[in-house]
Image 1: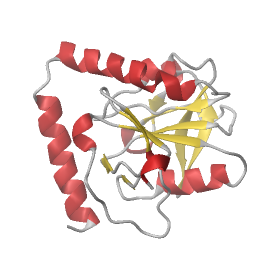
Image 2: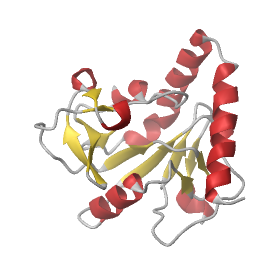
Image 3: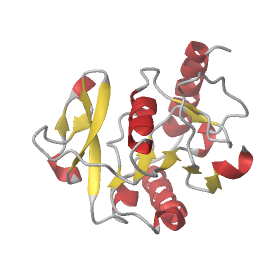
Image 4: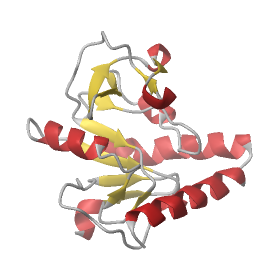
Length: 185
């Protein structure tokens, strides 16, 4: 399948999986996600998170591990990360919650990354606009950045196509496991 078909497929897989959860199960799995991700967050100076939309797994419970948070804000063809607290987020690009545009632009050393699908080697399939690939490349050009894909277990793919600009993830956190993708390359 090409990336367009894979996006359609993994959106449907994620939607069906989440539709089968009760509200309590979803909250419990998101709490488990935070516990699973905790070992990867030992050296966080500043963590960038995101506001989940729709069927995405919500990283809000993970955010509690960091005293200093940043969130993405779409700025033209790119996203920049602004220091902010989750409660200050407001609808922005495509109604995705974003920090206030006057919040300071920062350079996080840990980046929680949303996705549609991911392989154990850290090949990520996103929404298709390249925002996170460009942002991760820019951040990594300045400092080491740990990129952690955040997913439901059903989003792990056996294989995905890649393009030259695709940035690999370092780790994947799901409710049931933490995968060090660097060991699978």
